[in-house]
Image (cartoon, rainbow, N blue to C red; front, side):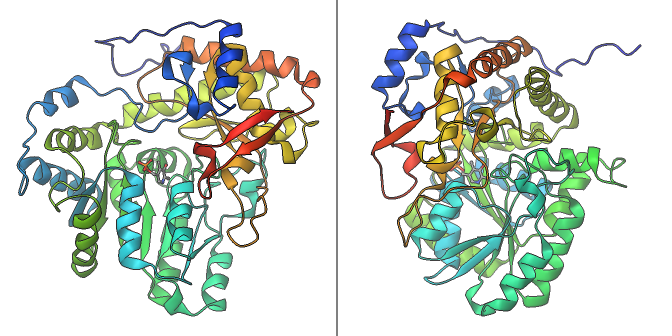
Length: 458
Ligand SMILES: *Cc1c(COP(=O)(O)O)cnc(C)c1O
């Protein structure tokens, strides 16, 4: 018999968790306007709001931090970062940014104008925000099966190539400045995109002369899924798979807070010098000079190191397996989930979890609030609140699925924490029939409202 699977790391430093009571949590969430973003972190027991910037850095990253070169221009740390990006992704030109959305802001400033169309698989919320803010339109060409929460597909994040080609044919190609492919497809539930699909997207894009950009926050998890799920690729090592993936893109935006396991940072990678030059102007304007762009030297050092650690097979195996462990326990307790489980998160299918709550009353948010009250778990809503209003009609957009995302920070929680989370969820699920009403908005911002919305219990 095989020995049990273990994490390929041990723990050198720990952080205290404050264990609150149910009464405290009921009071705190009300004060927070029933918005989980408004909670203080010590009001949370297990924080699964996001896996973004919440990972634990390694001893080597903390060591690298001390070697940061804080020169304004030409920092040695920038060149270490640039070399790491080139080595792993193949992109020659690199602009550091303070995080992923800043990379989008700089890139889209250089690429988009009013009336443009940006097809892709499901655009991440900040990506959509940056596109719509410029009065351009993201078009979701994800395969249909992605909206069936229980259908098995190894690469549910894939682009429907016919949909993509139809969007291009029905529009003026000059109005399509780029295609954005999100790897893994976060909005579809952390679902990977296959190598074959990336290759096909690139073929279609080349046919019409449209550049392809990868929104690459979880590119390493995507590569891990390609290795374990895609026919004919299991013998390749992670680095070969990653190189091939990026060979099908003209550039990338990166939120380093995800697969590069740092707490803050981002970058843009380009193959084309001209576009790099054009974007550099916006980088200087919005982020900082081209060799730091909103990052300190020490942060570029930890990022360069993190890119290597985050693409290591045994690390990725333990990461994805921990998420799967959480999902499997919840599934055994009957909790309706999106399957297959994502690389970074387990998604509860809130529509099936709470069938009595009307969609106008924010079903997924209602589940997320109950998880918090029950066990101090902070998850995030990926449903009607996040889908926001249609920019023209100002009507609520109701997504095909109401999801609650339990995102697992990297190298932070133990499997005991996952067991506690699964047990908390199961308890809410057992009393689901008593939950019949949801929430009403009392305050909202005009764009990306889920971050600041205030709600009232109905
Ligand atoms: C997190 C994320 C972003 C935005 O990055 P930030 O670092 O949070 O600004 C963009 N796209 C995807 C797919 C992401 O996961």
